[in-house]
View (cartoon, helix red, strand yellow):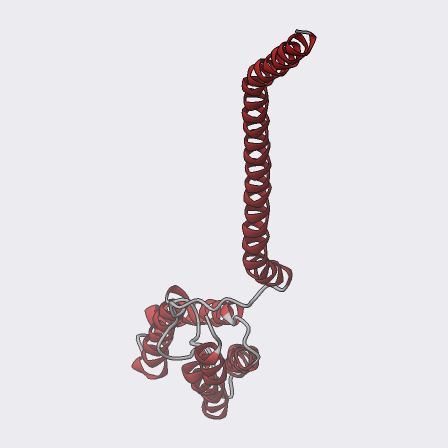
Length: 224
């Protein structure tokens, strides 16, 4: 009888332990599932943070590449701004077709020679003085205009001086012709002085003498 009771008690204790084990298994399963969910969330967070850092790195790399591409152009712009380049006007400069000294030097020689010839025939000092004064001034201004033009500078002041002398000669010869009515040399001087005055006005209004050929070639060869 005692042995039967002891066996029954052992059997009941084993059964109780089995029930407790069965009750604790769902708790273990839930704990395991919770741990798996936490692990999955942790892996997801790690992956997202890694992708964000990779995206930031890629953005920084693209910005640095753009900066490297933009720097050479900026350096070129700074170089161009630091050293100003020479710009040549594409449009040609307005100028006359012929130089003032091409007619100014012969005109001064004619006036000077006329004064000398008039003095030889009439022995009149006023003819020699007027011819020498006006003719010498015309020759001097024409020669100076030629030198200044050869240096590439404007010779408009010398052209205006020759035009003033031509106007003075025209006025004096017109007064002489009104008194003497002689064709030679008074009428001839009026004609040539009036023609030269018109020529000087044309050169000034056209923009002055045309530039020398060496300056034209240099302007054509220079890059725009």
